[in-house]
Amino acid sequence: MPSTGEASKRDPAEATLGSEDPAADPALAVRGLTKRYGDTVALDEVDLAIDGGEFVAVVGPSGCGKSTLLRVLTGLEERFEGRAAVDGVDVRDGGSDAVGMVFQEPRLLAWADVRENIAVGLPADVDPDDPAARDRVDGLIETVGLDGFAESRPGELSGGMAQRVSLARGLAYEPEVLLLDEPFSALDQLTKYEQQDNLLDVWRERGATVALVTHDVEEAAYLADRVVVLGGQPGTVETVVDVEADRPRERTDEALLAARREITDALGV
Image (tube, rainbow, N blue to C red; front, side, top):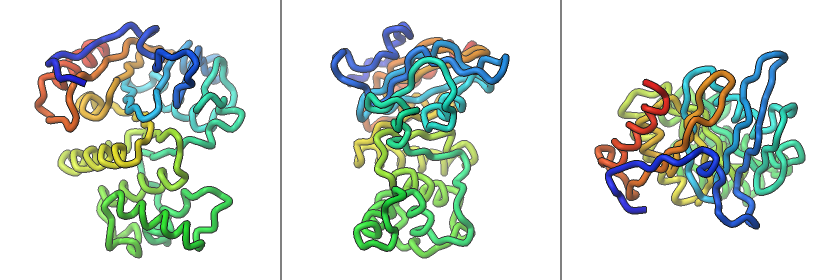
């Protein structure tokens, strides 16, 4: 995509539809999603589609339903109105089985080493001691740059290394869609930049479809192809901003600065 120095802002009704081919199911599709908790409406008529291999970020203020959206997509919220599907399969009918999740906190098992923590993410019918499974885990350790640390335990890892283990665990299932819930928010700025670039490397290598929830506008613009801005209570799609910057990207690229301005304006800050 050419770097024009400007971001492109599209109407939400058009920008959330993903592929222009009506016969092709997006990797992830949400249509008319409304989620209620009693009398409280968390999300209201949300539409979102992500094509295979696309990287989309979702930003918005606290309370706009970002985390609720992820919970729906992972199958943790079965009661909702509308549709949420992965590769055309409703998440209530098994579509969520194709989703991997990386949380804000690594949530590693303190007593287990890196290899064992990653193996937790393997499919339930895979024996982690099987040679093929071990090869898969070892390949992920290499992918996230943790060669030499396979037998280390969480207490021996830095925060950035622990988050890499969490990313590898999320990939162990070989998901169709990888969801990330503010995975770098607890890291210092330099480590955050390092982990953002590591995520981009993994995304390119694996060809994964990625949806990232973040409060960080700079992070969203740097990482994503498109940025979905949620707002309000209940949460709705305010706008979608196309990030028109060449990859690999420079953080000072004028196109990224333009995208950040568009996102910030949409957030009203």
